[in-house]
Image (cartoon, rainbow, N blue to C red):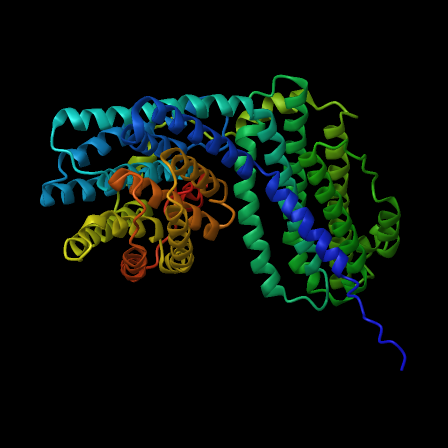
Length: 576
């Protein structure tokens, strides 16, 4: 009997290579770099204060470090301190105020409700306000987790350690932003380039006669929204102060990418009309091939940037372009009156599409040449255009005042969140595990979103992440770790949650649960190895339904109508 030959999937190596590249892109991304810098700062500050003040002081300081770290995301160096400073300035009095009214059920409820409304209204400032919202909320909730103190001097001491931790991390965040600025520029630009390449691939798929136009259109819109978000983050960092040759090159590369995006959008507008002309179908594969080749070139270029490798020069797709031009009817045919109007329109559209796709490839070639330093950037264009694309950095009152109307999405979301927190607080007063009231409120604020679909999506991930996080907490406490180990694990978990906040919400939930529960555990019982996992999971499951019910009314995502078109729900930091 002849041996049976095992067939090998010819696409297996391609899939493995693709997965490996995706892993590299995530591992070398600015998300992970930022998460690592946050982790290092958290560990250093928490252990430093522990050695000076013991576990009680370190636990209070860790809350200040946490709430100040949430706004610490890749951002322009200019006024970075103003991006982070509102968190400790507003969070410290809220932390101390909750401590002051802890023993009064009614006053505590009033502070929590008013503080929630104030915190959520910070989303009026878009992506800058999202992390600030969660900083203020966590200042109140972790203050509830600390043991109640009745003396004013004790409250002042806890507030002092909170402010010290926040201040130290503020210095750390500003310094690391300067140290990592060059790397952030490269990482953000590479991510933006890769995101645009995915759009080109999707557009190439639309040229296929067997394609599902509705599914591809939905995919294209989602990719365009993601690219727009990446693009704004990249603009703010890459186009900041392009004053030396390296920054000039990066700025010129980004402006070239913007030019290619403009050509792609123009192609997208003409494509719907072109697909309606049957006679153009035989010419579409050549257009599709050019788009796919350009997308591959941009993907390889972005990966080389992340790896710090010497970039390869790109050559124009001369053979493909020659075949493309030869496959088209001559240009003069759409001026010939003897040709039918529909045919003249098809010829015009085909030539217009070919020109624009060729320009996209030209921009890819120019981008590679700029990044290599083979051609100098157009200094006049960079110097005159960079300020047009950078988001404002000052905290003006106009965005907030613009949301103080009933139809404003941020105000309506703030009212729903406030109502949910108030209801959760009332429920917490009647549960048997009264020592963990903050669990219920924490679940509400991190799950509830601007509409039902977003809330339900977060709810499912939150349940799974909470269960896994609780099990990890049990495993950590079962080993009877010392205070230094607990502080290090808490800091590492916070950094990991921070790193994955905008990539994988499930991972963020797992590590945020681990960090939050260990932090609250140290505040309440020190290093004692006890943890009520059944109560924690029960609270989560119960409050997911309540949060979903109170967030059920569809609404626009808060912050979409305001400053810079930002999406604060995706910029909320690791607590989101």
